[in-house]
Image 1 (cartoon, rainbow over the protein chains, first blue to last red):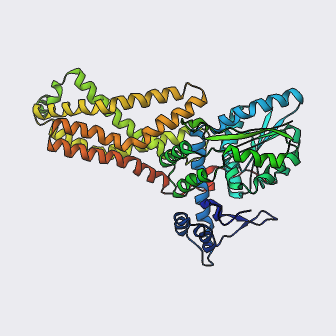
Image 2 (image 1 turned 120 degrees about the vertical axis):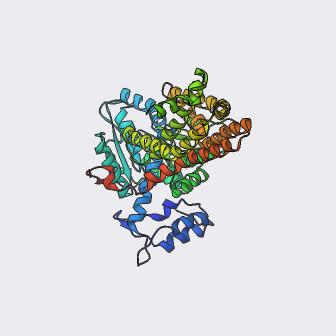
Image 3 (image 1 turned 135 degrees about the vertical axis):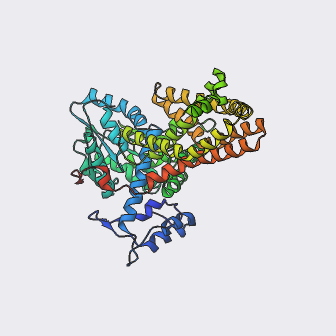
Length: 293
Length: 201
């Protein structure tokens, strides 16, 4: 779905998986670099230059793993700093409440593209949505799934992490009528062209609702993100990708029609961008929320 | 032995008024907390835990240790000069008042935000973190320099200026050095705990 004009983040070009098995595939350094430089992203290409390669021209696996872990560890702390887990709980609470009124049993929240699962682990640890809500984190990156599971185990947090595709999360779902899907910072990775299919999958699976969080583009978001990435992130890739994610993020006026194209009339959709006039850091990352009608 | 006691007793620092002592102690506390918070910030995002108090404590210790190591020589030079005569001590007392006039309000704002951020709803905490604490963090080197420039401007003394400049440079180096301390080794899977069973969806 990627087009030659879509801007990319560095992490986008460092990891590849076999479509069928999901197994990791080595990435050629020259290819990774070219995907960035072809788009005029020379600074990003230089970040790839700094990553060691093996004799066969593929990126050194351990070096790539180190970068993925470092960036996602920093992302977790950024998420904590701007209180994304609390924002998620706040958006999901009304849907969870309605589900409790309408049905009985355990409610499952599936975090697609969970990375190290920081938000999911906080939600599970704090039981912010109640004791009858269980959490599953899903990511296509096996390294991150392994790391997330280790971190949850280390703190005895009741959350499960599975390896899978955000665009096809069916196997993480057992009872769609009592399943909610969430994500943070995933929508801009999927991209505008693939978002209708992403949302359509929610309707096909008939999940009860979703809340997908992504940066709200705009001056204040960019300024805030620049400040937060400057002060809170150390990895050069973190800083570059953080700034780039703000440029790739879609406004509510674009997100809503794309989601509507995917789910049709099956869901009530809401997505509001923060004010353009005053800074609202608590809404830098805001959700598009869907409730099954 | 008596000579040493006499020498210490003759230091002009014992002649300071309680308010001047208070300013001196306040500055020491501000400088030490700079080391501690720099260390805590450097530790952020290195352990991946929900409860990262252990990493923060280690970060605070590393930051304070780095600050003491860097500021120690500056302190010794300051002590030699300040304790050499009542006139020199008076000069530093004047500088201290100017410096605390800059650092004091900033520290009060930072502490108030810190306390508020722990007692208010998440929306307020999020905004305080980003707008106040984040901004103060970003401007920290500039604020450190501004305080010292105020001290230098009011005293117009070459030695005070030299010691002040070295102190600011040492202070600015603390976050960079503590960051490097945390980042000298990459975080690997084995650092994040024992393996847990992961599934293929």
